[in-house]
View 1 (cartoon, helix red, strand yellow):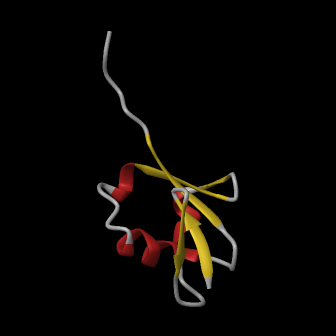
View 2: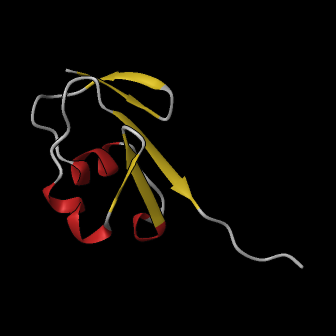
View 3: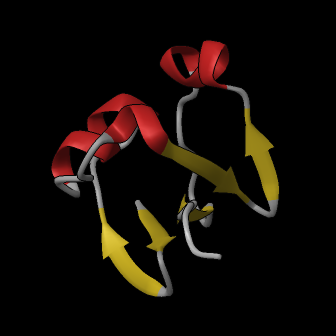
Length: 68
């Protein structure tokens, strides 16, 4: 199936879960990444149960702190 990850179309296996995608994409520090699918934020406690569907648009959002 085809999904879009961070603006790039990708072919992935049917039934791919969000944790599998995070691993495939080699997301650094996954505990600190917020995931959006089709412009809806996924709660951390729900990530394990998310199964991606054809046409999903996935974004990984990294929040930076610091500065003055």
